[in-house]
Amino acid sequence: MTTPAGPVGVVGLGLMGVPMVQRLAERGAEVIVRSRRHASYDAVRGSAAWAESMSEVAATGTVLLSLPADDQVAAVVDDLLPHLPAGAVVIDTSTTRPATAERLAATVRAAGARFVDAPVSGGPTAARDGSLSIMVGGDDVAIAAALPVLGELAGRVTVIGGPGAGQVAKACNQAIVGTTINAVAEALSLAERAGADPAAVRDALLGGYAASRVLELHGRRMLEQDFEPGGRAATQLKDLGIIAELARTVGAEVPVTAAATRRYEHLVEAGHADLDHAAVWLLTRGA
Image (cartoon, one colour):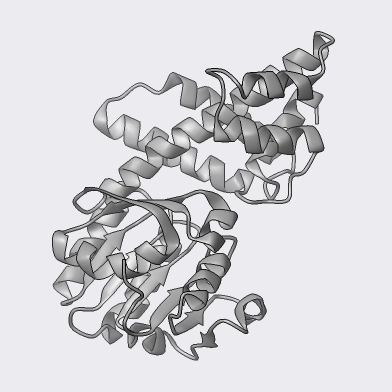
């Protein structure tokens, strides 16, 4: 991969947007940012310039979005559209419905620009060190335009298919993550209640078929009661809702994911929406 030849505009300075900006700047890109709250600029002040308007972001010709949900992505694309130069590319790393990505790709293409859905997995640490897994949907020309940016952020870039396909892959990712976090919480709680040391059980499981990044990282978070958000519980619940909607649309059954969704509903209702999604462990404590 090659470093982007021109400036990169980034919209969204949340948990993922900030480390992506820092990574791109560290790799030599000129980065221009905009966010709903100017105060969020403080986190990247030494790495990027602040854009006073969305037209400044659009003028870069390469715009990366890192936003919470469909509505925000659609609103930002609407703001960008009148200002995008011909051939510009909008790279959406947010997690949205596949249908939203398909619609936005068509809208941007009609305006003479390109759109790629490129949701990510790996969390803020992977964004900062350039080891994200990025799932890409779009046409060949749009993907080629996006690759110089995506290559700086990713350890793996996988082209899934046409517009919306990246978001399908991300839905599958979130189904596995959401259900596995719940399974880890249940297993470690079971071990503890049965009189075994849950930390020792986790260590043992990491050496066998039960080993996973979720058991390694989120299992540690649970045992250390470290719920500083890398991925918020409310975001996980939103993503599980996307899975349920997609499953209904295509006629798939997802009963395990549905059970995980109910657990996250309970966690959010208990007031823990802004904790890390590993905080589902708290439900095993009656919290």
